[in-house]
Image (cartoon, rainbow, N blue to C red; front, top):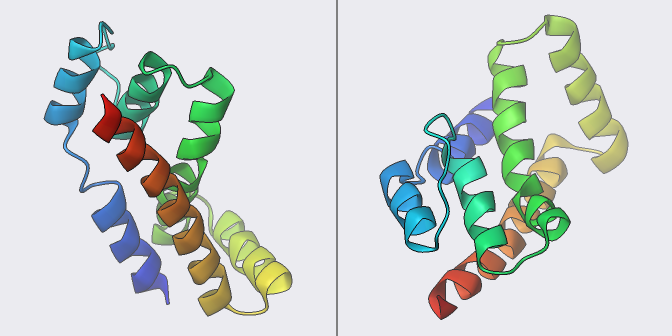
Length: 121
């Protein structure tokens, strides 16, 4: 199941084209910091197209969950934190599959909002 989380992060987060996002942000009048990565660039774009900052952050939250899980489960943080994440997922959802499905559903919902917002601009 670990591979599913890692692959999903690769597809969802690493698949975002930072160059395009940066260009889009600039076309909307933003001056994004050169250090901003894809997720924050996308959040900046949402704010630029009239989403409240809190709402933009909420929309991007599932993406951050996926990316943070990847870091935790891949071993970039202590083994204790990874073990806690595993236990919490099982406690809250009963299985890793149900946890993964919930994350996918949340990301899908956010993607639909983002796609619709970008289509209009």
